Image 1 (spheres, rainbow, N blue to C red):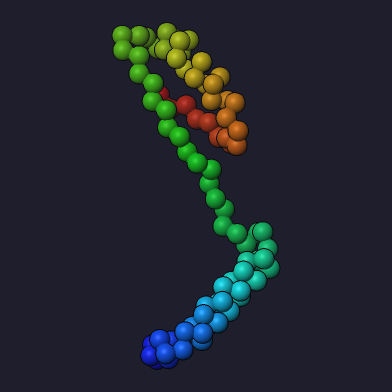
Image 2 (tube, rainbow, N blue to C red):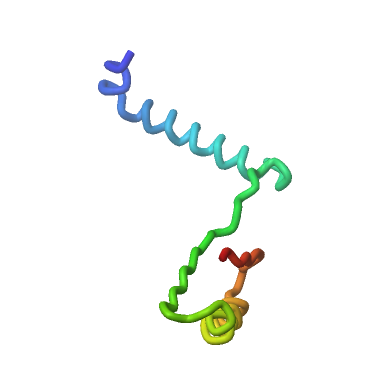
Length: 82
């Protein structure tokens, strides 16, 4: 079977193009609801401030970090992990 593709390269090119064309045709006809849901990218930020208490950590690190991260385009979720 593979000898046919080696001896007739035009046949293998045509079959490959047909498969690609059918795939592109199926992709354009697929409804948007059938696409899988893609989760947004996730970034973990770890802030360490040795020798500080919780209140100082919140005022000097967490609040400025949160204000800076709120302006990121496309971000849907933000969670604070202690």
